Image (tube, helix red, strand yellow):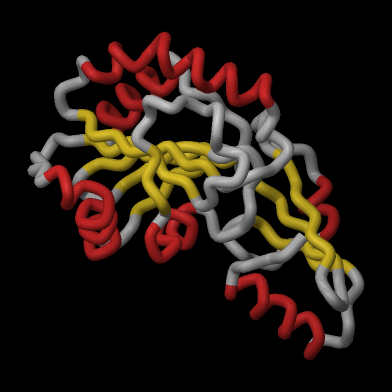
Length: 210
């Protein structure tokens, strides 16, 4: 699989300098970890691992499916400008941003998976529309495999790979979502998910906890 992240290329260069290591283990913060730490069972049942074959090594990544973090305000402003400028939307102090991310064709680009996403969107979109302080966007990295996920959804391209670089620096499978407040604090799920009622619970938890 082609790894597009510059960070991963840096790891590859480091690997060569350290003596042609055959196996490299990192977490999804791009920090080196030991093999026992990589193999240790996570407390979170939905966490998973990824493996990439590079020219001189295998890169093993331990992924936390659920992540909390904070972006710089200039990054948040770039997201607002990129995806909401055409709508001339104003952002209030208590507004919450929900980003639904589609990475392109992968193992989840099946007819059944896309049909389920479309069905859940039709089922829950009115509930999301009633959340006054919620601003939502659907972003794709590639349109390959996107058809069938909901023609009525206003999918937008990830211009300059802004969402990918900020939240999805390695190719996590099956997309994900990001919930973020006006201070740049966010929670994200990377990996298989569907547009479902649980997102409302996550939005409410995030709003109360910040």
